[in-house]
Image 1: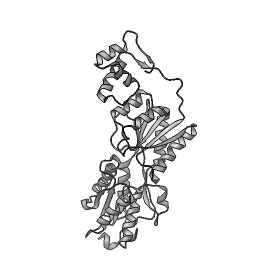
Image 2 (image 1 turned 180 degrees about the vertical axis):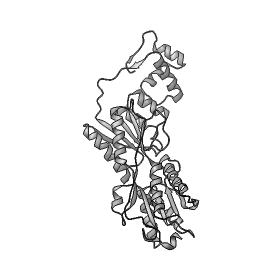
Image 3 (image 1 turned 45 degrees about the horizontal axis):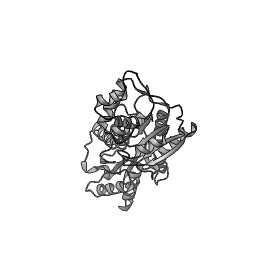
Image 4 (image 1 turned 60 degrees about the horizontal axis):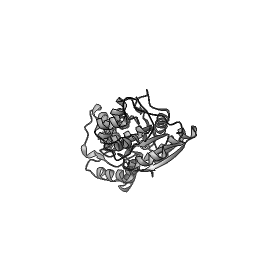
Length: 340
């Protein structure tokens, strides 16, 4: 059992009796074991705190690791996040360990056991939210964590770093409207991810502010990947009144739109304008070069790493960094016949 500072009048046996659990359960809570229900853990920890028990800080803990957790690592998007974490870790003499676990919503249940063994200086989670039990286990061992670009809406006390997705969707759509487009489509990400919904809301807000009705056949949810972008674009571009411009929720989806346009004999931007999202390095190498919304992925990862290594006390628990439009050659005014 971990060493504790405690008020002398209350024993752990008395805490166990009041909580209605065994001493072994008290030990499991103190040692952040996974085999304790969230409700029992919360009840025991509340009693320990109320009785004045405090875990002694371990003077020997001096981890040289920052743990970075993804649900998928094989993308240019992930590479920008990795670079950002490494920038800050390297400057502080720390190494980065990469873990691939779970899905975009949460790491696998057993992931936290490995973290407790490694005792990193901090944990940066990408997309994933944490369950109540995992959060309690990390906090019981004083392992700080932060979520980058959370998939859902984290609890108020869970620190996270994101970007202004609604503003990004608004800027992309407003740019196309200013060029004269009215049949503007939007292909966003999964419908259960906060960033996907926010970008789509920005698109809808820009269209509404301009007095332009949204054709629901021109709206699609996808997976932020090339294939999903191509599939949605092919469906839209075969409509009797196809869009003259498409706002894609990621640069990878925009590549899929490029491919769909080529397959149908359409030229970008003469026949179809395309705006992406993220401003990955590949946006400079597409033909034509991709107009896109710059999402500061590297800066988001840097800020998240600073938060997790410097502690979040007194800091905002939710940071949203600014996005902005980068104009390149994939957008232009619609052809006169198409604009009519």
